[in-house]
Image (cartoon, rainbow, N blue to C red; front, side):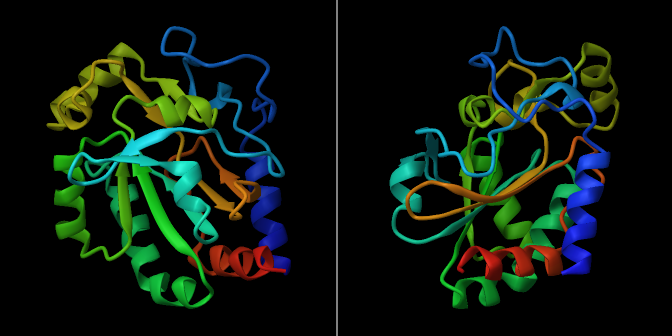
Length: 214
Protein backbone atom coordinates (compact mmCIF):
# COMPACT_ATOMS: atom_id res chain seq x y z
CA UNK A 1 0.00 0.00 0.00
CA UNK A 2 2.90 2.36 0.80
CA UNK A 3 4.51 1.63 -2.56
CA UNK A 4 1.24 2.18 -4.41
CA UNK A 5 0.75 5.51 -2.63
CA UNK A 6 4.30 6.52 -3.53
CA UNK A 7 3.69 5.88 -7.22
CA UNK A 8 0.52 7.98 -7.15
CA UNK A 9 2.49 10.80 -5.50
CA UNK A 10 5.27 10.40 -8.07
CA UNK A 11 2.76 10.61 -10.91
CA UNK A 12 1.28 13.81 -9.51
CA UNK A 13 4.69 15.39 -8.99
CA UNK A 14 5.76 14.65 -12.55
CA UNK A 15 2.55 15.95 -14.09
CA UNK A 16 2.38 19.56 -12.90
CA UNK A 17 0.78 20.92 -16.05
CA UNK A 18 -1.86 18.23 -16.66
CA UNK A 19 -5.39 19.49 -16.08
CA UNK A 20 -6.95 16.03 -15.60
CA UNK A 21 -10.17 17.19 -17.23
CA UNK A 22 -10.90 17.42 -20.90
CA UNK A 23 -12.24 20.89 -21.57
CA UNK A 24 -12.50 20.49 -25.34
CA UNK A 25 -12.48 17.73 -27.89
CA UNK A 26 -9.01 16.99 -29.15
CA UNK A 27 -8.29 16.69 -32.87
CA UNK A 28 -5.11 16.36 -34.89
CA UNK A 29 -5.26 20.11 -35.52
CA UNK A 30 -5.51 21.15 -31.86
CA UNK A 31 -3.48 18.34 -30.28
CA UNK A 32 -1.15 19.54 -27.50
CA UNK A 33 2.36 20.45 -28.64
CA UNK A 34 3.92 18.94 -25.53
CA UNK A 35 3.51 15.76 -23.51
CA UNK A 36 3.14 17.95 -20.42
CA UNK A 37 0.04 19.65 -21.84
CA UNK A 38 -2.19 16.61 -22.33
CA UNK A 39 -5.54 16.27 -20.53
CA UNK A 40 -6.25 12.56 -19.94
CA UNK A 41 -9.64 11.15 -19.06
CA UNK A 42 -10.40 10.94 -15.37
CA UNK A 43 -10.55 7.91 -13.14
CA UNK A 44 -14.26 7.26 -12.68
CA UNK A 45 -15.16 8.33 -16.20
CA UNK A 46 -16.13 6.09 -19.11
CA UNK A 47 -13.63 5.32 -21.82
CA UNK A 48 -14.48 6.71 -25.26
CA UNK A 49 -16.16 4.60 -27.91
CA UNK A 50 -13.27 4.11 -30.33
CA UNK A 51 -12.45 1.58 -33.03
CA UNK A 52 -8.98 0.08 -33.31
CA UNK A 53 -7.43 -2.57 -35.55
CA UNK A 54 -6.00 -5.97 -34.67
CA UNK A 55 -2.84 -7.45 -36.17
CA UNK A 56 -4.80 -8.56 -39.24
CA UNK A 57 -6.36 -5.14 -39.80
CA UNK A 58 -9.79 -6.17 -38.52
CA UNK A 59 -11.84 -3.54 -36.69
CA UNK A 60 -12.09 -3.85 -32.89
CA UNK A 61 -14.63 -1.77 -30.98
CA UNK A 62 -12.94 -1.08 -27.67
CA UNK A 63 -16.05 -0.54 -25.53
CA UNK A 64 -17.52 -3.79 -26.81
CA UNK A 65 -14.25 -5.61 -26.24
CA UNK A 66 -13.89 -4.54 -22.59
CA UNK A 67 -17.51 -5.51 -21.87
CA UNK A 68 -16.46 -9.18 -21.88
CA UNK A 69 -14.12 -8.89 -18.90
CA UNK A 70 -12.24 -6.23 -16.92
CA UNK A 71 -9.30 -5.00 -18.94
CA UNK A 72 -5.92 -3.37 -18.57
CA UNK A 73 -5.28 -0.90 -21.37
CA UNK A 74 -1.64 -0.03 -21.97
CA UNK A 75 -0.85 2.80 -24.35
CA UNK A 76 2.72 2.78 -25.62
CA UNK A 77 4.65 4.78 -28.22
CA UNK A 78 5.57 1.98 -30.61
CA UNK A 79 7.75 -1.02 -31.24
CA UNK A 80 10.66 1.30 -32.11
CA UNK A 81 10.82 2.56 -28.49
CA UNK A 82 13.18 0.55 -26.23
CA UNK A 83 11.38 1.71 -23.08
CA UNK A 84 8.11 0.46 -24.54
CA UNK A 85 9.62 -2.92 -25.42
CA UNK A 86 10.92 -3.26 -21.89
CA UNK A 87 7.45 -2.47 -20.54
CA UNK A 88 5.77 -4.94 -22.90
CA UNK A 89 8.19 -7.66 -21.77
CA UNK A 90 7.53 -6.85 -18.10
CA UNK A 91 3.79 -7.09 -18.68
CA UNK A 92 4.32 -10.44 -20.37
CA UNK A 93 6.02 -11.55 -17.16
CA UNK A 94 2.83 -10.99 -15.13
CA UNK A 95 0.38 -11.79 -17.92
CA UNK A 96 -0.69 -15.15 -16.48
CA UNK A 97 -1.26 -13.67 -13.02
CA UNK A 98 -3.41 -10.89 -14.42
CA UNK A 99 -5.38 -13.35 -16.51
CA UNK A 100 -5.92 -15.52 -13.45
CA UNK A 101 -7.47 -12.49 -11.79
CA UNK A 102 -9.87 -12.29 -14.73
CA UNK A 103 -8.28 -9.45 -16.70
CA UNK A 104 -7.59 -9.11 -20.39
CA UNK A 105 -4.47 -7.15 -21.30
CA UNK A 106 -4.72 -4.89 -24.33
CA UNK A 107 -1.70 -2.86 -25.44
CA UNK A 108 -2.37 -0.03 -27.89
CA UNK A 109 0.07 1.97 -30.02
CA UNK A 110 0.16 4.06 -33.21
CA UNK A 111 1.92 1.17 -34.95
CA UNK A 112 0.15 -0.17 -38.02
CA UNK A 113 -0.89 -3.86 -37.83
CA UNK A 114 2.24 -5.09 -39.64
CA UNK A 115 4.42 -3.45 -37.01
CA UNK A 116 2.37 -5.02 -34.22
CA UNK A 117 3.23 -8.45 -35.57
CA UNK A 118 6.93 -7.60 -35.32
CA UNK A 119 6.50 -6.51 -31.70
CA UNK A 120 4.70 -9.74 -30.83
CA UNK A 121 7.51 -11.80 -32.31
CA UNK A 122 10.27 -9.65 -30.82
CA UNK A 123 8.88 -9.59 -27.28
CA UNK A 124 7.18 -13.03 -27.37
CA UNK A 125 3.86 -11.49 -26.39
CA UNK A 126 0.77 -13.60 -25.66
CA UNK A 127 -1.64 -10.77 -24.90
CA UNK A 128 -3.47 -8.52 -27.36
CA UNK A 129 -1.86 -5.68 -29.32
CA UNK A 130 -4.09 -3.24 -31.16
CA UNK A 131 -3.32 -0.50 -33.65
CA UNK A 132 -4.38 3.11 -33.18
CA UNK A 133 -2.56 4.30 -36.30
CA UNK A 134 -4.91 7.27 -36.76
CA UNK A 135 -4.37 8.20 -33.09
CA UNK A 136 -8.11 8.68 -32.71
CA UNK A 137 -8.08 6.70 -29.47
CA UNK A 138 -5.07 8.61 -28.18
CA UNK A 139 -6.87 11.88 -28.85
CA UNK A 140 -10.15 10.68 -27.28
CA UNK A 141 -8.33 9.41 -24.19
CA UNK A 142 -6.63 12.81 -23.96
CA UNK A 143 -3.10 11.42 -24.03
CA UNK A 144 -1.97 12.36 -27.56
CA UNK A 145 0.46 15.14 -28.37
CA UNK A 146 2.17 16.36 -31.52
CA UNK A 147 5.89 15.63 -31.79
CA UNK A 148 7.99 18.68 -32.66
CA UNK A 149 9.55 18.77 -36.14
CA UNK A 150 13.08 18.87 -34.73
CA UNK A 151 12.37 15.70 -32.73
CA UNK A 152 11.00 14.01 -35.86
CA UNK A 153 14.26 14.79 -37.64
CA UNK A 154 16.33 13.65 -34.66
CA UNK A 155 14.46 10.33 -34.60
CA UNK A 156 15.34 9.80 -38.26
CA UNK A 157 19.04 9.90 -37.39
CA UNK A 158 18.31 6.83 -35.24
CA UNK A 159 16.41 5.17 -38.10
CA UNK A 160 13.09 5.85 -36.37
CA UNK A 161 10.41 6.89 -38.85
CA UNK A 162 7.08 7.63 -37.17
CA UNK A 163 5.28 7.91 -40.51
CA UNK A 164 6.52 4.51 -41.62
CA UNK A 165 5.56 2.96 -38.27
CA UNK A 166 1.99 4.28 -38.26
CA UNK A 167 1.41 4.70 -41.98
CA UNK A 168 0.17 8.21 -41.17
CA UNK A 169 1.68 11.70 -41.24
CA UNK A 170 -0.03 13.16 -38.16
CA UNK A 171 3.19 13.02 -36.08
CA UNK A 172 1.20 12.23 -32.94
CA UNK A 173 2.32 9.99 -30.10
CA UNK A 174 0.54 8.88 -26.94
CA UNK A 175 1.98 9.63 -23.52
CA UNK A 176 2.64 6.13 -22.09
CA UNK A 177 -0.39 5.31 -19.97
CA UNK A 178 -2.12 2.48 -18.14
CA UNK A 179 -5.89 2.32 -17.52
CA UNK A 180 -7.68 -0.40 -15.58
CA UNK A 181 -11.23 -0.56 -16.92
CA UNK A 182 -14.34 -2.36 -15.70
CA UNK A 183 -16.76 -4.22 -17.96
CA UNK A 184 -18.99 -1.16 -18.02
CA UNK A 185 -16.13 0.89 -19.47
CA UNK A 186 -15.43 2.83 -16.27
CA UNK A 187 -11.81 3.73 -15.53
CA UNK A 188 -10.91 2.36 -12.10
CA UNK A 189 -7.22 3.22 -12.11
CA UNK A 190 -4.95 5.29 -14.32
CA UNK A 191 -1.27 6.04 -14.57
CA UNK A 192 -0.18 8.71 -17.06
CA UNK A 193 3.35 10.09 -17.07
CA UNK A 194 4.78 12.52 -19.69
CA UNK A 195 8.26 11.26 -18.85
CA UNK A 196 8.35 8.30 -21.24
CA UNK A 197 11.31 6.80 -19.40
CA UNK A 198 9.26 6.18 -16.24
CA UNK A 199 6.76 3.33 -16.56
CA UNK A 200 4.37 1.83 -14.04
CA UNK A 201 6.11 -0.80 -11.93
CA UNK A 202 4.65 -4.30 -12.57
CA UNK A 203 4.22 -4.87 -8.81
CA UNK A 204 2.19 -1.68 -8.53
CA UNK A 205 0.10 -2.69 -11.52
CA UNK A 206 -0.62 -6.03 -9.84
CA UNK A 207 -1.67 -4.25 -6.64
CA UNK A 208 -3.92 -1.89 -8.58
CA UNK A 209 -5.42 -4.81 -10.51
CA UNK A 210 -6.29 -6.64 -7.29
CA UNK A 211 -7.77 -3.47 -5.80
CA UNK A 212 -9.79 -2.92 -8.97
CA UNK A 213 -11.74 -6.13 -8.37
CA UNK A 214 -13.01 -5.03 -4.95
